[in-house]
Length: 274
Ligand SMILES: N[C@H](CCC[C@H](N)C(=O)O)C(=O)O
Image (spheres, rainbow, N blue to C red):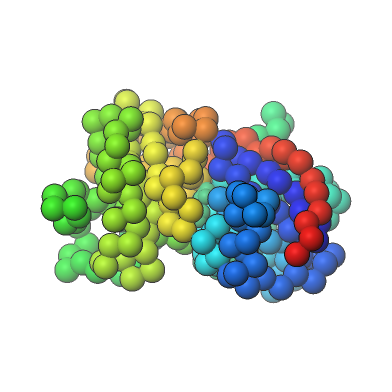
C-alpha cells in the first residue's frame, strides 16, 4: 500500500489516498502501521475519501496510533490540504472538508502555510463530553491525589486544558495519562498544559488521547486559546509555542469559528507490505 509521511510542527502522520485506492482499516492494522519499530510509525493516520455530500471536496478520517478513529486533527488538516494538491486530487487552494463533527475549510496561504477554519468550539461539558454538574469555565478535577482546575473544550475532539506556571514540568507525563483516561471523560480526553506568556502568547504541551505527548497538537492549540479567552486571560489572536514550533490561533468568541494557521510538510513517500 502506498503512503505519504507528513508532519505539522513535528506531529507526524501517514496519509493514505482512499479516493483512488479502496482502503479498509481495522484497529489492529492501524496499530501495526503506527508502530515505530515494526511499522512506519506516526502519531495519527489520515485517510482521504470522497465526500458524502457532493457540495464538499473530500471526507477526512483520522486514526490515532492506538488504532481508534477520532473526530478531528488540526495539524493533520493542514497536511491534508497539501497532500490532496500534491498528489493531484485537486488544484483548489481552499477546500470544504467533511470531518466526523462538521465541515472544516483549509486554505493555502501565499507563503505556503495553511489556515484552517476549524469551526466553532463546543463549550458545554455534555458536548465534550465531560461529566459535570454545572457549565463552569473552570472545573476542579481530582487526579493523582490533587485537584487541578481544567477548562473543557471540544473542537470535535475532547480537550481538558489546565494552567501551569512553566510547561517544562514533569506534570505532563505524570498527570497526562491519568487525565486522558479520567472516568469523568467517557470518550477519554486530550490533556493540555498551558503557560500564559502574555495576552497574545502562550506555551503549550499536550498529552494526546491515543498517542501520548506529541510535539504539537493543532486542536489542542485551538482548545487552549479558547480556554484562555474564556478565562479572561487571552486576547482574540494568540501565538502558540509548541515543542515543534509556532501556530497562530484566532477566535472571536462563542458561536464563531476558531482559525488556525501553521505549516505542513511532506517528509517521504513509500509503499508498505501489509
Ligand atoms: N489525539 C487526538 C487526535 C489528534 C489531534 C492532534 N494531533 C491535532 O493536531 O489536533 C484525539 O484523540 O482527539
